[in-house]
Image (cartoon, rainbow, N blue to C red; front, top):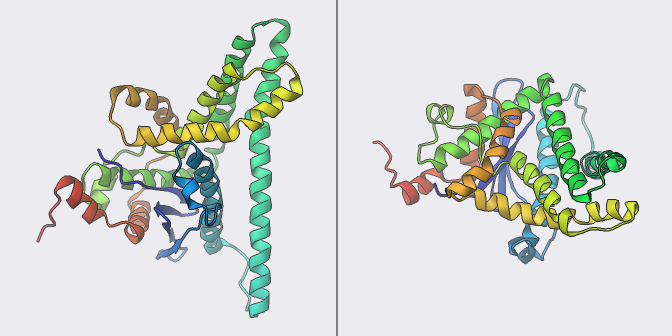
Length: 311
């Protein structure tokens, strides 16, 4: 299997697909029609785009870019389902609203990131540190901290999956994966072929997060400080390094059929059982629309699988 290098995410009633610097968002509107928009994404590093190609460094910026683009596309998809009636606005009012929305999006990302660090990085440390009276080994406490971190993440992912909106989001997540798996296994991108493709994919963000947690555990074995405050600071400071290493691992896993790599990818694929659900045909149609807006899958199949269109 050769990687197509396309990726994406689920959005509100839709799918976003990204190919190089182009991305498309397809959304099933309340009237049943599929709305598709395409655009070019400019990295947060601006003119220093070479940074996004350097091994280990690129993972940091790709992670930030994914967060920014993800929030942007989620906001766009949600606009079709706002309950408030739209009113006519002047050009000045539209620009003011756009600035306000960008500010709110930035604040949301900052607060969300801070909460994520607190819940998934700092909290597990303090919980494991409570065991110091009974467990003197720092190494054992590091392992317990990692287990707690993974347990919190799994509980969070599983907990929100009971919400109806999240259930639908997970189904669109499944549609995204199925579309990519379909073409990467040499099948024409049709509803029938997508339907029978796997909803798990080795390059998924869920697998990336699991790699982040595991890599974090390993690095903490080598970076040891005595002060509790410094231990918290070290965990936060190591995040860019952890993200960089995890990105290389997930990129390698997504393009390799090596048996060892496949075994290492298994936990992430199992975890995707929580974050992906089986989509219906209408959701698959949305995923296909997003792919076709930014990726020539027929050319990909011709180049890699000798695909010939039926006359």
